[in-house]
Image (cartoon, rainbow, N blue to C red):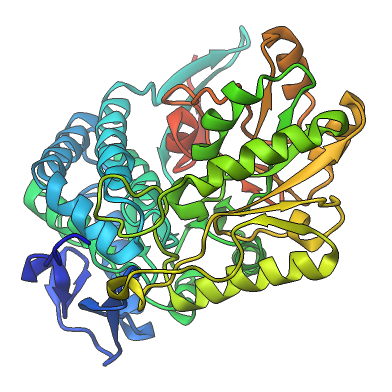
Length: 491
């Protein structure tokens, strides 16, 4: 067990809210106690926003946007502020990684490798894109000329989940600010601490007053933000159920929306896949953030005649995963973010058994050392004998649970992969890249990996069907915060 890690007081205790570029006392009295998912011990606390706080933040955003203090700043000016904010975050990278692991429970090495560097990279990427983007285009039909111009969409309400405390907000804050929008971010009560580093960073970088607010809050606060008549666009990451409610609310005033929702991604093992190569590469894609990732590869589709081979290899690999203190470098699987999430995942494992699946390894119980007995752990679990019609194959579990589904031929594999309300991610595994690409083209998802290869930076992120609407990352993520205007020009 590692020694307890204490966050600096300025990070662990957040009694104020960042409203319109100023730290101020909340108008409500609700405070959330943040607990370490690995031990249950107190990490810190944060004030939660009330409806009145949301109203004040939206008013500040509307005033700042309409004044033009940021929306009409030059691209070069906006770029400079974003780059300074990225530099601020980079200087604090070690403490930010510890903070993320303390409130989320993912292994510290993953926080250091992904959760902190990625937001810094996103901020610099959109700083450069803001500067270099072609906002104006002249079009002519020979007789008439139009100036087609791009301008910021307006006031943005951004709502983010707990599984990416810094990275998911960065996919909304940084392109929106780069485009010239004013932003109100509502992070969740489970992870309200690390995200406040964006407030510190943009305050230090000289972002004008009123342009950014960061208000941790519950679902009611999020609903109030979504329904606010002065919010021009909603950018949301979370469950498909919540996404439907947000889309319905935004429809009342035709507010723009970007929705990044759930997933139940299929990893298709073609009949020539090498199990010894595939399993080590697949496991990180299935278990990232302790299995609490929307893009996790949780349905493992294997040829029926090789089912036993893959089940044995996957079970052995999962048993070898070190489960424990996320601060230790050899830990691969940490706890669930909360007791409620642990109970939810354990409930799905019981449901899978009741549906007829076989629990090959893992399950609901886990033997832990005394210092971790207060933590919210679920062992990495493999379900075999799963039919794609089972709830454990159709519903997002959001934990370290994978299901093996056998198929008879390639056409059946494609059909099973597409037999889902979701369409976020997926993968195809074969030494024959052309064959794998042919299958990947037929998978109805926003992203597919061949043989576990990562996407190139700047590729769009988003899904088909109930996995969302619109795209984040890359130029697509920037354009999502722009409106298009055509101006007829004199000849």
